[in-house]
Amino acid sequence: GSKWGVEIQYLKEDYPLGTAGALKLIPDNLNHPILIMNGDVLTKINLKDLFNYHQFNNGDITICAREHSIESPFGVIEVEDNKFLSMKEKPSISQLINAGIYILNPKIIKLIKSEHYIDMPDLIDIGKESGENIIVYPVHEYWLDIGKPETLNKAMYEWGDF
Image (tube, rainbow, N blue to C red; front, side, top):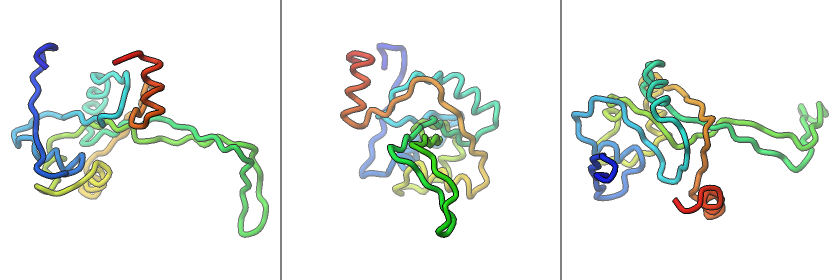
């Protein structure tokens, strides 16, 4: 990171701990929110805006979400019992999906058990059960999951080599 004026410290798992479980390896003296981002996400999200949103809304956990539409290639029939209600030809269903980007306050990391495998959805559930303020940040900027060959190829076509 010195090339960019950034200090990078690496933490090594002795065995897989999951995305959230590995956070327990961060030193206990952390006193500011941290960014967690899946390694297969390519985005132009403004991180300063994300942190400001987290702080302005008193978030303990901020989950970034992206709108995703699924188009059915078929007509969809709605029924109640066996009675026809309606038919929509090739509808589009829009939903919010997890963008794989999070802001966590240090107190959330304290909820993780040491040497315990845990992924982010489980940590978010624990935070919810503990009464933490969990908020959602809508991602409108460019976002692409490049964890599959076809989406990685799409990114390389759009961006060239990165």
